[in-house]
Length: 349
Image (tube, rainbow, N blue to C red; front, side):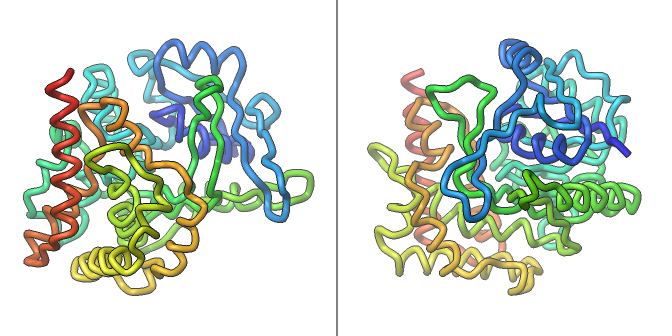
């Protein structure tokens, strides 16, 4: 049965969209009018490398069994959809037209799966140790999330690394590291049944008889998506420096023992919140993957480009660590560096 999925964000969101389209489901991407016009006329192209193949394959939405369309937020009819994917950067939800759409989604009680690095506040409310913490300062506008039912919001760890090639159109996405999306379950069993249906459908997809990387994996533990926090704190946010950004590889491997220490501290924070060791990814596995991450993180690139706001998972982790009585000097140093660079952008802007 074809499901209708609404995905907010046409860049990184096009990766999940392509996997859903390959499985025969229909997807609407929410984006700016110019990008929507391009997608509606030419479709999307996602470049991904299959296992044991040297070159990336181009997967075009127009060749897939599911139907794709794109639209502006104000033109969305939420009654058409079974599930919502949240794939925009967290600051974008503060935009007025997006906020209005978010109110409609919340009031329609649609299950929402976030593939942001920044976990939605309602998801954090599902975790007893976080439910009463003061974490709003880490969000661009925390009020965006007030109307959502926590049990209908899930988090999906955005482990796959992908980017828009700067010389290409806004409908092209290049996947650099084709790992899996790891989603936690909802509290609602009907939503969970849908999520597991999508998981099975994506898992069954092949291309020329070959398995296609980037699966949707569903886990009962709320903490599996938090495995990304150690990676973000050790690599992504440490790409931000007082000067030019550095690659994730250099952030991690410039001082491996320091990176190991930061990674282990964040793992300890998530275990304090309730995570099991099996929810986490060993540092060695992450460090090996980081060797191939030759670009700065998206947050670091955005800051270098003068963005006044980025997702602040670094600040969220710092706030949690402080309220748990587990502050860390290196985490605080990173937060100060990011704060300083963002303040520079605000002053110069």
